[in-house]
Image (cartoon, rainbow, N blue to C red; front, side, top):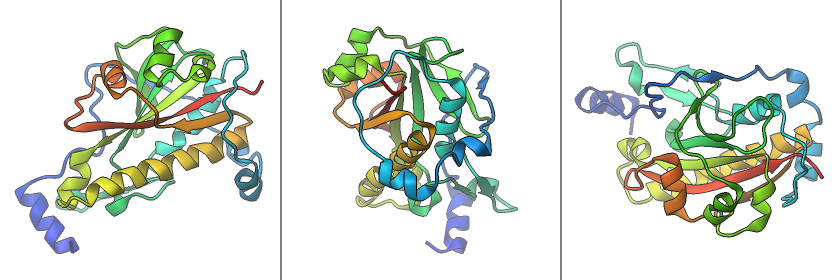
Length: 236
């Protein structure tokens, strides 16, 4: 679609919100990452050292490290049309088809210092965590991860869902579903590189019991698909 066509469409049918509404909760502010953390090692080193590791130490993850990881989903800059702001693009550190960024990020904090165990939604605009009602024990965590026992000792899970309508508004074709998968792939790779720079262990998995994850997040699978998660923790 051309910019003119998009603007005309937005006037007749405004695009969906680029973020999940936070509801009645206030976001828990995250500490601001320092450049020294992000640049702890060079990009070439991060690429060559990046590995999927399924063992995690007993030491809790630092809240500052979690904050740094979540910058992968934080908008770097918005660009809006002066007449209809909601048509604006949002740019992040990973590419997204049509700048629609359909991926939502939820955090299950299992062993993160200064953060109560439980499920949170990441609010990228406020760089904060909105607490949700879900809470599970380690056995339930392993169950929702398809009985992968190694997930039970993680420090945190970054759970990725995809809000279909964000992309369908601009691309109302079946190929849109492919782009949703690419979006999560781009974002999770950025998390891999950040985790490597921070000295954390990380693995991505899509072997999930979707219905259990949906219950934990409180999302409607008809509109928001569970696609995978990054499992993170300190080194052994």
